[in-house]
Length: 315
Image (cartoon, rainbow, N blue to C red; front, top):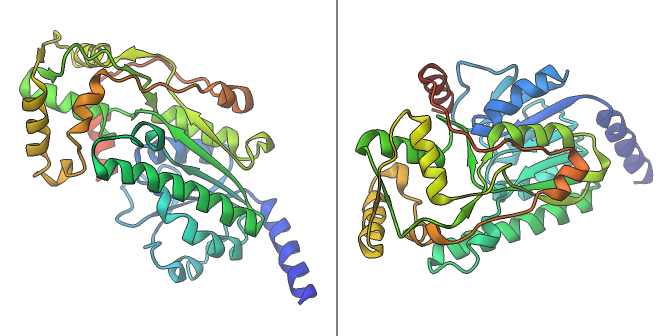
């Protein structure tokens, strides 16, 4: 038994010296930016997606796997030293044992500041989301500690990347179609949009940084602005004069509830209307100190060619 444990330890130590990285949820907006960064850094990148491998491989070798079945992962032939998970955090803790068996010694994963901002929501589904993030973070840390894997959890704020995200880009799509944007009150709630490419840079910085081992970071954008100011900048980025229409709470919530009939918007909560006037700000000073995290100021620019290319990547 002792010899088997020692052999496994030696195998994992050798594995940890290689530069192989497995990216789970690689077809996401962060994956779009992260994959070429990893390739340029000389990493051997394996990208996993449950649904598809995009035409633009972004410098990675793609594998279509359903990670709900750990047997598929074990049979994949992958031997990643490092795992970066961009998928919903809940899927990761059940995979840690299999990843340890494959020789992984490092995991970087994404949670969300929603674990804080939605914890007291009036919407039970949002409260459950916040609670599920807490449970998943705790489970991941526990599993990693049990298997001797160093972990890092990133909690970003409002993530955007034109053409890929379903936050800022959805606002832009609404403006393009309707020519205006509805708002509750003055929209004074503070926001810190963070670009997906800055999150990718944080991943790259954390790969071998021991200061980031076994801890979580809040990752916010480089500018704090009101919800209304954010929408105004989106208008400008679209080359349009801002046209914001103040709408009563009940009507705006009804609009959001109706939009949920469309599959794309089924996860929208009417509570997002109320949050237009609620501050949702977080400090990223610890990530700046340990990882050199220096996010850009918010800027939304729509270049049709790149916009369409990104949309094709995310399909």
